[in-house]
Length: 104
Image 1 (cartoon, rainbow, N blue to C red):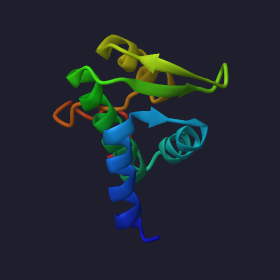
Image 2: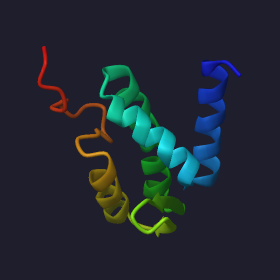
Image 3: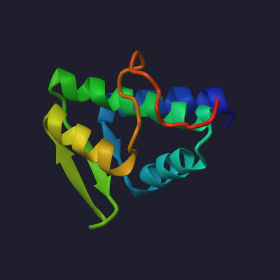
């Protein structure tokens, strides 16, 4: 499967289910740890899809690697706490300044 198709399918999956399981969490964490603008931007785009679900009042189920369990984020606050814990510096609002990188 090519990258554009994969991203379209992943976006649709996240939008309709709101589920980040262990496998998807590992992909997000790996991309975020790579620390390149494109990979971090990819993670941020997926997190924004989940944030939109939470704002609509839809359930989001998030993998918690410390317990190896899924947890439900039923509020924006709970979702933001999870994001800050696992993806510190990620911008859920693309208008926020990007302070993640110290380089030019």
